[in-house]
Image (cartoon, rainbow, N blue to C red; front, side, top):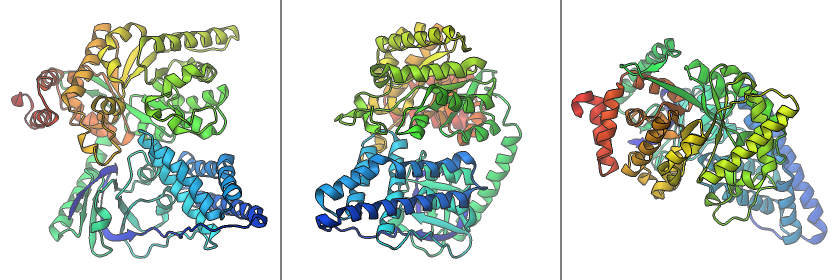
Length: 578
């Protein structure tokens, strides 16, 4: 049986199927007498401390195989467990409702999970998986069973699961596991990040996997195309083993000239940049020849510092860890893009009914100028070597941009007064992720140094599609004519003003979209490091003139599938298809 999912860690594995079942400890509500409530609170505290010891032990086991930055994922789990709000909330449930620790703790975690799942951001939705991992471990300690690690039997195993926790994935380095597939998951999950670090082929989001899977026979996981084949034929096994060898050889060849520029056959240069979420990804991005960082999401720093806000010095240190290895290439750092739906700090409003359309990103920062200015000063100080650029998210009108620039100028004046060095002409750009901004981008062009199109949010807002909602995700179409018209509008405005324009959403890594983006005036593409080699290879097989002809013809199409057919024909036949 052939199933399709999301490829998150490249490579092809052929092995023996092993189903991973979740061992759930049942939780029931019990009434606790008042005289025993404090003992119940103490029991919960002890279970949390035991879970912290578990996570710290897992970190030590993974040390040497995972780098310090990937090991910091386990540190993040410890921070969650030590967060006073988690303990205090559960303790309040115990005392106020007179219930057992298991029931109270599970309710507190589930409240946090609901908050994360209500966001439109895949990254924060995937943090819900981390919380489930910690919930299960703590409940096991409360039940007195302890959190036992899985013991794998057999060789050449391919794991099939509903989901895998980061701790389970991190333990794969000393297990006979050659690949895995899960029914749930996303590219931004910690599980996916660790799989890429360990170079284990993986596919997530495979619908129907657990209903069809058995722990018998072979399975193929294609981390390149997202295909999972259950009980493959001998012919399919032979075919995919050849594909696996071909991929390894292709990767060796591509890596041999990874540092070469991405130029079209008629000499037009496209910058291929990296989206970096963890500082450890800097090394892999440089290895595959990234021309810099097109997007670093600074909210990771805020989350690391939670429940405190990062200081100016912490901003500086964090950004230097990204910028210095890339020097002299530019590193684009996005200012805070968190809102009420991603509550991690008391300063955020947790009561918004529709936080995705509420006080988030630049709206939040302008309401809290002290937070914005602290970040601006850290960014300016990090720009001293002149390879840092500032990117402001969710700009929807000129007034927001002008207010942001006024605050930035105030920060420059403060640093000048203290004789602190910074780049006086630090580039400032805006994220184009709202349809209104895309369609009026010509008005923004004189005030910015560059545009960066966030296609993930742009497409969601434009098509009214939640790409994380399985019921409507199939309608999420980057080739929809409305999306193309927005992209073309930004490209045209940037070209007229002589300003560069980048794409930093998932579309940037889609090699089918590459010729369309180039033809519409996009000058830089920013993506996860694992996609850089493929996109560079695609650029080198295109010509700017042909891409422009393709884009012009695509803008005349009336549907996404029509555009897709045109693009596929172009990729196969080149100019002849036009």
